[in-house]
Each structure stands twice: as C-alpha cells, then as structure tokens.
Amino acid sequence: MLPSEEAARRLGVKVTTLYAYVSRGLLESHPEPGGRRSLFDLADLDRLAVRQRGGKQVESRLATITTGVTQLRPGGPYYRGRAATELATTASFEEVAALLWETDVEGDWEAPDLGDCPLTEVADRMRWALVMCGATDPLRSDLRPTAVTRAARRVIAALTDSVGWGRRPGPGAGATIAERLAHHLAHGAQNPGSSISAPALNAALVLLADHELATSTVAVRVAACTRADIYDGLLAGLATLAGPLHGSAAQRAYELLQTVERDGVSRALNDVLSWHNHLPGFGHKIYKDHDPRFAPLWALAAPLLTGERRQLFDEVLEVAAAHHVPAPNCDLALAALSWGGGMPPDAGRTIFTVARVAGWTAHYQEELLEQPLRFRARAIYSV
Image 1 (tube, rainbow, N blue to C red):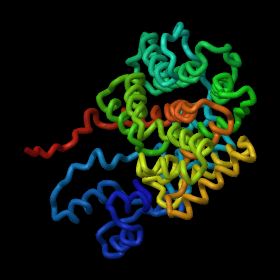
Image 2 (image 1 turned 60 degrees about the vertical axis):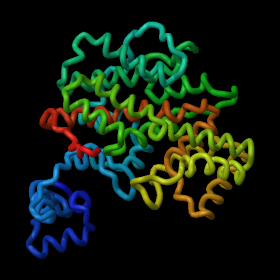
Image 3 (image 1 turned 90 degrees about the vertical axis):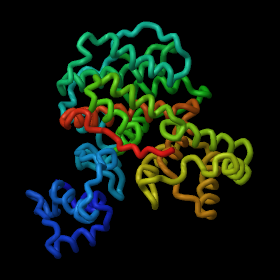
C-alpha cells in the first residue's frame, strides 16, 4: 500500500487529481490502520495506469521500485518513517544503520585484519578494503539478514579504517564510526589546527546514509536481483559512486570554495561557470526549492569557518541568489564542513561513501525479497 504522495507520483499526477479519481470511482482509497492517511493499493494503481494508456501495458520496472527504506518528502529523507534531519541530532550512525536494516543496534563494528594496503588514494583504498573483506569471508554467499548485516558492519568499519592506513593507529576498540572517522580525517588534515568534531561527523553520516533510489543505490539493487553477495553488491554501488557526477560532487564544491578563497567570489564563480555551465553544490533534481539537508549540515560547518571564510561563504550564497542560481545543496554544506575543519579535499566523498553503505545494505536486503532477475530494460533498436 502506498501513501497518497507516492501514489500520485507513480501515476504522474498531482495529489488533488488522485483524489479526483477516487471521487469519480476510478480508484479506491483505504484508511491507514491507526492513522489518518489514505493508502492506495499498488495493483489498483497499475491497472489505472494501464487504462490511462489506452490499455497498453508499459514495462517500467526500472522507473518505479516499491521500497519501505526511505521516502523523500519536502522536509528531506525519512528513514523507515523517521526524519533524517531529526535523527541527525538524536541518534548515532550505528543506530540509524540498525533502523534502516531493521535489526538490533548491537553488533561487532570491527574490521577484519586485511594486512597492509598497497594503494595511496583514499578512494582506491576503500575499494581495496571492500574487495578484501569479501575475500576473507569464507561464507560470503550467505544471504540471511543476520549474515548480510554482519558483513555490512565489517565493511563500514574497514572503509573507515582504510582512511587512516599508513598514519597513526585509530582510537581503539569501542570507538564509534564517527569517532574513528574524525580521528583519521584529523590526521590527514591540511593544517595542524584542524577541528573535526565526531558529533558533527555523526550528524553528516546520518543525513547522508540514504536518499531513496539514487543511481548508486539502483546499481546495488540490480546486483542484488542477480543474487550477487553483499560484497559484490556494495562494490556495484562503489563503482557507480566513483563517477564525478555522483560521489565526487562534494569534492568539486570544496574545490569551488578553494578557488573563491584564492581568486575572489565573482571571478571564481564566473570561471567555474565558464568551464562547467553550473556551480557545484547548487541545485538538486529532487528538491526544486531547497535541499532540506543543507541547513543542518551548514549549522555544523559554520562554527568551523574563520571569520574571513564565513564572509566568503555568505558572499557566495548572496551572489548565487542574486543571479537566480538554484539553492545550495548538501554537497556545498559538506564541502564547507571539510573546508572549515581543515580536512583534505576528498573528505566529503569519504564521508559520503561510509554513510551510504548503510542505505545500500538496506536496499540490498529489500531487493532479496523481490523476484530474481526482475530488472530487464527494454531496448529500442535504431540504425
């Protein structure tokens, strides 16, 4: 059963039109048990959609996927019905992962001994760590929920530890993922006065843990529908995240802020526009007015900026708004958090990657309950 907003989106109509269908007897609404919302049967919606197309059945499996993991609302993502913006200040990343996975929060969040990593770039070390986690799991093909979540915990821990390979040891057993990540990013910072707060990183991890059917999440679900194991499923997400238009968005916003600091606001924004036709960190395909994740992330980043940097950042927002540039998104706020904390330019991508494994795992588990091999896009041959 789908709520009215999701039902309307599936039909491609407004909510008012949806209820017009109900009043005309074309669609039946059902009261939510114990609630006030109206729910709509998925099969009824599909039948109405076919009727609207003149009886022509259109395959749209890749376009619409029924999920109970995350819902995107005007106020931002809701994980299993709870607002991510609220969870960012009230729950740990581990608790949010358990919520997404519908499991107990208790569990081992320690990485296996993977040996020395031969790679230098953080993104490469993360891919290596994920591959090695799978290679050292003798029962990696176990798809039971407990086995999948156990594997996800060790992967998240390994990716976090990979950030600090070759540097000082981590904070030790019992430390949270946010504490470990803060430690490793601090020792990779660009200046000795870096101030990276574990609570701030925890909030960022929570806000970025999932975002419904983002491109990398769909890749994970496609791998899951072939019954690839969790490690290969997560690797599909990591490979898709490597694209410069997805996982690297925060890094490009960080580079924009560096250019602003070097060349001034107007010149920097104009130069970036001349090369890219858009400003990194602004606009969002889902949130047309504003990204609800920006404000809580910016509230964490603002205290880290010096007075001069804060003034530059405010001027960036003012110039962008004056020229009707779309509103800033979470990537710009994440870049400001990294920039203000003295973290390396790729810190935003690192935080995003660790966070998103939690959401990917939830979608992987959900996809295992669906019919295998259900994703088959329809090709139109052209010459």
